[in-house]
Image 1 (cartoon, rainbow, N blue to C red):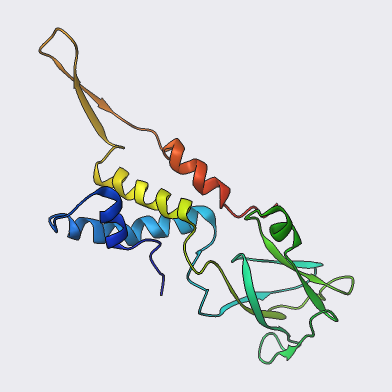
Image 2 (image 1 turned 180 degrees about the horizontal axis):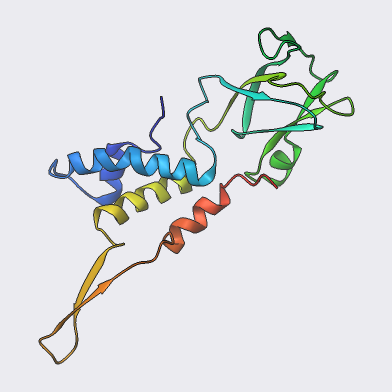
Amino acid sequence: MALNLITISEYKAYAGIKSTNYDKEIIGLIPRVSQFVKNYCGRTFVDYVDTNKVEYFNGGTNKFILAETPVISIASVGYSEDFGKTYTNLTEYVDWVLDDYAIRSLNTTGVTSLITVNRAFREAIRGYKITYRAGYDDVPPDVALAVMDMVTYYRKSDMSVHSSKAPGTNNVQIEYISTTNLPAHIKRVLDMYRSDYT
């Protein structure tokens, strides 16, 4: 089950909302915004901290790029010769090694990969099964802030219609906003956590 990146109480404290008048609206927006952020960044942040993530690979390469990062632990790396019916465990530092040096040394949020100790992982359909845990115990504060700002953004419909009165006239001008870009302050934060598979 997908986990939300913020709680309603965190959002209400941030937005200075003391009443329950907007609870239904906020409760509806939080999971949608959380999912948007996860899709945009290419990672879930918290879904696989306490639950195993299982990924399958076909081989034919010297590394597998894991979807979730940072990796907390790898439970098993298995190899199958019968298209995934059964798996034999491979040995760390003999058959494979986790390459997260760039993330640890540069404090970046890029990708984590599993590297073969041999020349390449042999090609095999559903030949490799990796079971691991990854993510953050607590959502990074800047990501939580971006999620809260996005909830506010959608609550106030900042993306749809603005009206203003021109100085010295009684005419109201309505401006329809048609941009598909994220607000710059939100995009700046989320781009730092976007998985870069290049």
